[in-house]
Image 1: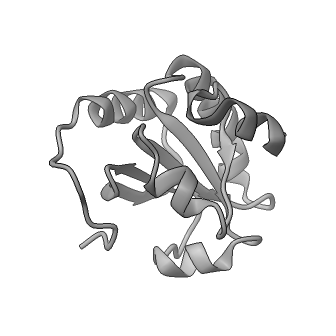
Image 2 (image 1 turned 120 degrees about the vertical axis):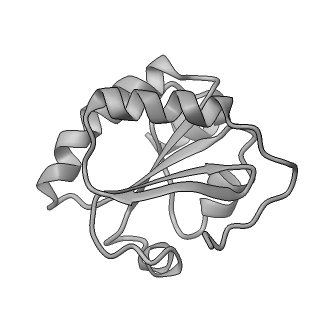
Length: 131
């Protein structure tokens, strides 16, 4: 599946699996705002959120990128962003973390967050420290 995401780039209608090595290019350098889902295969709430994020990736294709980070396979990202519980949902626009919250959300809350993320106006540049 990764080669498909690479083929279609940021206009993918599927979630993009991001790693420690690809986070900079796929998320921070993204032209589109990004919802990042920090998850793990063994996490029940993560598995419940996954179909919703897949659905929203199709619905918001070309407007928002939805990226998934497996915390077990990418510990450097989990540590860098202080992810203490999963799922953790992070919204990033223009290299700036604009939302960061642990826990599963209902579909309507995800949809509202994505609409707010699209509408959010930020100056060029940004800070990824989250502070």
